[in-house]
Each structure stands twice: as structure tokens, then as C-alpha cells.
Image 1: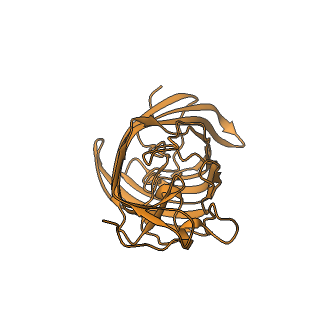
Image 2: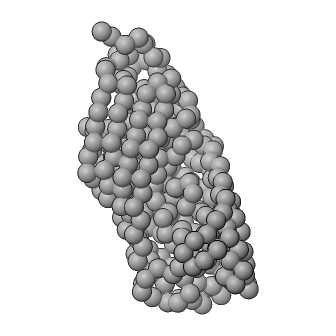
Length: 282
């Protein structure tokens, strides 16, 4: 059974979070990457599959973002300066709907598997303990690699045109992780996101008003010793379908890290907050 037309939140996959890339010091999850993809909670986000069965979704995602040299981003146990990231990735999701009458609603469980090519350019990399740091030159890294599988659970209810959904995503850190490289799709940490979504969806008029909010709890990367802080995210969207294949709308989102990262140097704080940039060596 193919994916139903109005349902779009199957693209609940890890992505580079723009707010994380722009955050200084300890306010940046490792690699600037978040489990929750901002923008995935758009129109129809709370609409559940109409029938029991197995649904298939495939999404190709292209991302390009950068952070200036005064922003310090922790990557694989190092601190990068002037990070530029491009990702072309494919996310395949299988979603099973075992019941449309579970606790009065529809239950869905599934898994998303990422495969893609991250391309990373860094102006410089800081290494060494605080007070004795060294700055190496620019570095380029790319790879064709897999990410961590993301386990999905969704439970939704419908009352006329109002749809309500609670969902969780769990990042399982068993994907390919290049410990010596900068380019990775794998977060290589346990992470769990819980979200609540509402959609007022009217197929007859073509209008959809949706909102979604959630909390992401991040674990630590045991290879790098970096413990990323937790995050909150809020999204809203309004859409008008003008035909079965064309619609217009607006969407906005907000994300904030609500707890500090903690790094390899112990409980005094993340290592990134204890580094000082030094002039580039000739």
C-alpha cells in the first residue's frame, strides 16, 4: 500500500539544524545535527493513515548550510571553525498500521533508514587541551554512508476535521560512523523525540492548518565523549490546496537548545566552551 496523499510527516529524520549551526560555544549539538528535521511538521502533519496496512515513503533531501569561523562546532572530538556542509540524502520509511482502533485511534509503527553523501569543508580544526590548542588548516571530507535507523511510533485520533497525533522518534546508534572523518550521517548517539501535533484538515475546501511541538532528549557519543544538550521545537503551517497536485501555503518553525552540551573535559562544561581561537599558522 502506498503512502496516502495528505500525509507528509514520514520525513521525520535527522537533519542539520540551522539554529544549532548558528549557536556559539556550548549551545550546539555535536556536528550541529538534530534528530528532528525542522519543516517536517507541515500541513497534514497530524493526519494518520486511513486504513490498516504497510505504507512506503521515499524522500530525497538536499541540505546546504554554513557557519562562520567565529562559530565553534564540535565534530568527532574536535572543534571546527568555518564549517560548510552539503548533504544529499535518501530516506526510506516503512510504516505499519496494525490497528485503526487502538485506544480509540490509529496506531502506526515504522523505521526510517538514511543513505546519503555528506560533504564537509572546515576552515580550521582546533585540537589539544585548553591553553595549549593548535589550529590546523582547512580540511575537506566527503563520504557515501548510511545513518542510524530511526524508529517511529504514532498514535492519532480524528474528530470530524480535527486530527490529533502523539508521536515518538528514537535514533538507534548502530549506523555507519566514521570515527576519523568529519562527514557522517550517523548521529552516533541515542536520541528520543516526543511530539504533539494538531491539524484542522478539510479536503473539500482545500484548507489545512497544522501545528506541532516537541522535545528532543539527546544522549552522548561515547566515541567522541560529547554529550549534546536537549532541544525543543515548535512549528506551524497554513496551506490551501488549489488542485490535487498544487497548493500554496506558509510555514514557520522555531528551535531552541534548552540544556548545555557537556564534553570530553568533564562536568565543567563542553569542550567547545573552553577553546580559544588562535591565529592561523603559516
